[in-house]
Length: 257
Figure 1 (cartoon, helix red, strand yellow):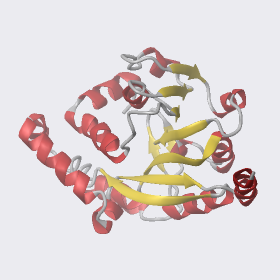
Figure 2: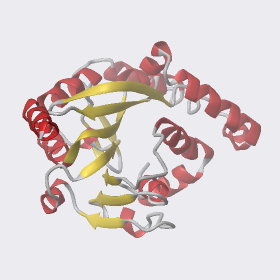
Figure 3: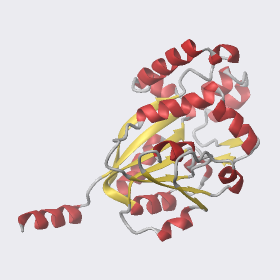
Figure 4: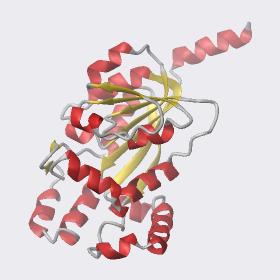
């Protein structure tokens, strides 16, 4: 992907749409009550727009071209900027935060996560979609027919690159677990995304509706199977913010009144 136009083409193609269909299946949200949702690094606004049909969504995105071309069938608040925009929100403000394919492009991730966890309510959910090193190695070797780049990525210290978005500073699920623990949070589920659908080079079959539904069903089931999850291009981490000890004490005090 070399431009916003390339990204638009990607999300409109079946292999782009499937990412979002799978993501929505992995993020079941209640229709009511309306939740306060932050989409951090909202890109073209597909996720913001989807959940804005029933929820109160705020989207933050630094790229003005992405914002200009965003999906906006449903009303949501769009802010241009980055982590500095979180200062405008009170502590414990959002019920749910999305951070999808964002942290790869930030070298020092912990301050960003500190800002996100600050505005996330106790009991709230942080949804993180991240690149998975094993899946990227498979993709480079099989789909791209590039064993040299796959070899380079086998090194746990090696980073990847995107011509348009820049260096991808890869991180592990263990890294995220350690960062989450610092903010009274823990990973409650790890799911796979794109284990199979982007490996086949015959794009014509992907426009077949029957193929699409069968592949989506396969990806949905395989997402929770450890072997396929570990080999998927993306991992989807569901991170739950725990109550801190002081908050538990405060809740107990109120209940005793």
